Picture 1 (tube, rainbow, N blue to C red):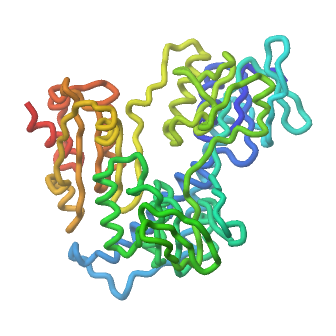
Picture 2 (picture 1 turned 90 degrees about the horizontal axis):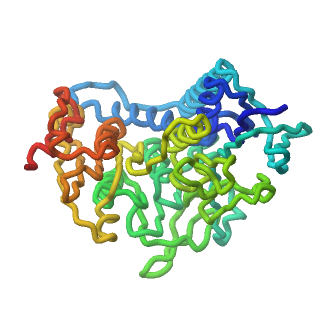
Picture 3 (picture 1 turned 120 degrees about the vertical axis):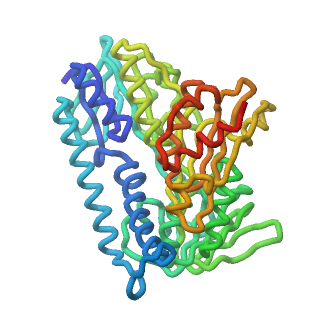
Length: 451
């Protein structure tokens, strides 16, 4: 029962690290208390995107006439089939991960693992009735929904993202507390399904730390679709019939048959036995260095649990960096070009620095921006579509940020990310040949006008 590496948590960081470790000849064990895939696959990224794609197809049918296509009757949907397809997609991907772990030679144990201590240079872990030992340990326990102390919340049957994905009902009206990424994606889906949606956000704008200009444009798009937005608003009470919101002008009541709580997530650090190894924690999670090491040289923390970037793709990269350090491969984690995407319709994506961040730090920068309509492909595929592409450049003419509103922002943003990570200048970027016609060409259009 002694292993080279043990991993607690089977999300994107955990399962990818386990496969990499086993492929490299390390005796590997992975502990997961529920299903492999973590929040992302089971109650986050994949299920929400599956639902959002169904909504996108429905929206496309409703607007088919704009493209010269006639659809007899009114486009309709079958909610049970939409959710059944979501469940099928999740099951298929879970099976694929399990098979990948098996093929690599990693052992998977279902159960809640805890650190017991350390003896003879090995870390001791208990899961169920069994005890295991390992040389190195990866903590990949993820995050959980924050439930704030709102008056009346405990007396109503509110949703978190988990319950919203179960598909048991379609409320007439829905109040979403929190206008971040998760809140806006659910707002998009339920709006397409015909639900009267209200989004309540404490900050002056939706989508938190994302670029404010594109966020405001997205909000305007969804306001046209009928979503009500309440910014600079604090929820002070929840009842079975309405949500009480405190605004500058006073208290208002927002009718809501159902409430979806989406105010953020927090690292899962309790009941892990961290104190047994004197592992440091902070308000955001478990602090780590550039190799994802904690203050214990043989314990690493990857993914949401370290609180640096609560995104599945960040977790995957962190797991790889941690494993490379264990394997003796020269590699360090960089957070300079982590893409953030909101899979609404239209999509919004950002990477690198924002104008707000640079202004707050007093750093000089140049803004390059164009409407998405400068792309011929975008115009061809988005009748009357709105959008914006913005690139930020520093005094050395290096690309340091990019923010896009318009489909398919999620696919285009990675091009800007590679430029940022490689510290490319505008002159370097001009030398890249883009295929025509593509929406991504707009990035090239932007830099072409810079000397």
